Length: 317
Length: 273
Ligand SMILES: Nc1ncnc2c1ncn2[C@@H]1O[C@H](COP(=O)(O)OP(=O)(O)OP(=O)(O)O)[C@@H](O)[C@H]1O
Ligand SMILES: Nc1ncnc2c1ncn2[C@@H]1O[C@H](COP(=O)(O)OP(=O)(O)OP(=O)(O)O)[C@@H](O)[C@H]1O
Ligand SMILES: [Mg+2]
Ligand SMILES: [Mg+2]
Image (cartoon, rainbow over all chains, first blue to last red; front, side):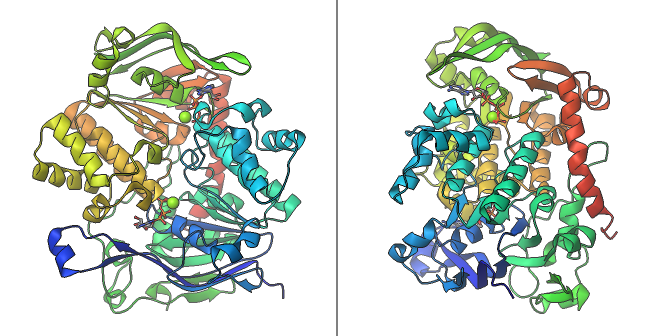
């Protein structure tokens, strides 16, 4: 059996909230945001793992943590057969160039005082690579940008153009693993399709694996081999692309699917209640159309439905 | 009644290659209480149009020709002081990159309450209550926690919703919303759009809704203007644009949607009802 490129076990990332009032401060109460709350996940070589979920569900935090831009609270991260969970920044450095990230905010992640040229080349130089002008030009053309843009500053580009710069910067390393966080969400359908094609092409050429993060299920389905659906810090359903697209099981996955707007069909998304369920039981309880009493007793485990399909829901016990 | 009229707008940028014309004679209007969709592919001039109205073009850009009438007054004749009174109060904006328009050094609470105190004259307590309220309306139930955070501690979609909350907080006449829901999942997006529609109903706010997503635009806009390479190539009632697109680029846009749609349909077969 081939070893996966990345394998993550019971990964948690908690943030401590600042006190919101004086009383809280004096009581020394600490509130904790469980952004990632026990995630297992494997990304196979040259494969794409698509991660979907609503805003605030912990997708970006998970993406940053698996490549150790953030220290995990607990859990285990194995990259290319090596346990990197406790490596410090210095030990991480030689591994870094193999794992890149394209950040969700293309503008704020590009240094406004640097020209596009230096934004792409500087990180390479830091790692001791020299790149000639010809290669830079090819790279820009590859992501669909006019090579003349090398001399521009980020604020002189449109949103979609900046996004492509961010992709070029990550790809310049020819990395093994790329976390692509909402890379297509600011792009129109035609460019979206172009970028997805590009990502696939680069995947084949350089044998890249992706963790492809998006809130848009239709985009995720068009690029991924496996899909994980995240809800409030946990994976609630995971499966092969066929399993998820042909028989989605979790009520949340179904709500996501039925809320996609498309022309000529009435758009009637289900809007959740204000209050979210806290404490014991299933974290989707308050929003679930199928909720029953048993759902409050404990948090459901991941249940195996088929060889390549798991779901965290009591409906399938 | 028209809140905004843009006439023959020409915008140019100075680049290393010489002068680049980003807008080449753009004209449109926005009625009171209307959502006008500005759609088109990446790099076509949508954001530049929005920034021109706010007079926030980058330094190497200039409005070479045209008029921008807001409630009958040409914004291009105003001095910076007069413009500042309109910006942020009468015309507000949701920028395409929300994180960059929030100040990283201040808590969300301070950024919202400052605006509420300045523009609506609320006292500190009232402003905090109202800020919490606003965040709840854009679908952030744990509003109190979020108010105490700094921008970098929010998720991408939360930042976007905070910006939307701020843009609508002072009952502006016109909101320029540049890709305001790109970071949002379909359900959160729906909440935000409900808020926008409420504001329109309650306060006759008008919105210029900039998006690359023609499908979304077709669900929420009254009229749609399709841009292509610095020009408006087609404009009209949403239904007409969607049902019988004239311009070849609009047709192309429409055709590219079903491609995604087909994927969705295959999913739909599996949805249990
Ligand atoms: N540095 C931080 N400090 C405190 N809380 C944080 C920090 N980063 C993220 N969070 C919190 O963790 C939760 C998950 O955030 P995350 O950015 O991972 O969500 P997301 O799924 O990427 O959402 P979106 O689709 O909106 O980008 C949010 O409640 C957020 O406020
Ligand atoms: N300061 C600038 N200097 C030079 N060119 C610029 C500048 N700002 C924008 N442009 C160019 O003007 C064109 C229109 O940009 P604009 O930001 O309006 O696009 P957009 O339609 O909003 O695209 P997107 O959907 O990608 O955000 C682009 O080709 C862009 O490169
Ligand atoms: Mg995110
Ligand atoms: Mg734009």
